[in-house]
Image (tube, rainbow, N blue to C red; front, side):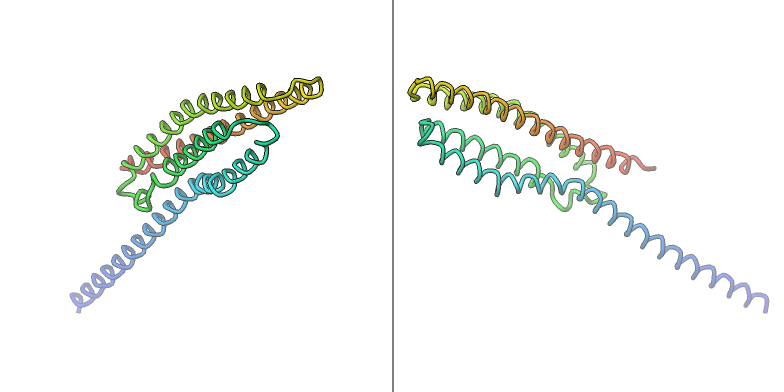
Length: 204
């Protein structure tokens, strides 16, 4: 009788342990899903920004510059060079920030490699900025020179050119400040993810 009670108690304990293990496994799956969702959501704003660049900002700049060409008399060559630079920059943005990470990169087993990808992404962003910014200034200088050389230098036109130069300089400085702020925010997002992933991979 006593043996039967002991067997029953052991069976109950075994069932309780199985139930507890099942609940812990389910909790771990939920935690992993929440972690994966959290990491992906941190990168979502970057993806959305790049898509806005590609489908809204790029066409707007192209149309705006083309509509001013006949009035400002810069060449289609300089216009094409500017648009090509912007297109390449946006496509590189898409490649570096969107296609570089896959769904599987957020899995716990792949986090070490994902940390390396995020660090590489940061380096590529800076490299893109260091190369793209001087090229952009060079092309804008080319366009500005063409505008100046083709303008009729009356007092009225000289005043217009001065106002346009000041306005473009202010606009460029504002755009540069916004761009660098966004770049800083992107780099900070990567740093936060790298820190989070390193904590996870170093868990005992």
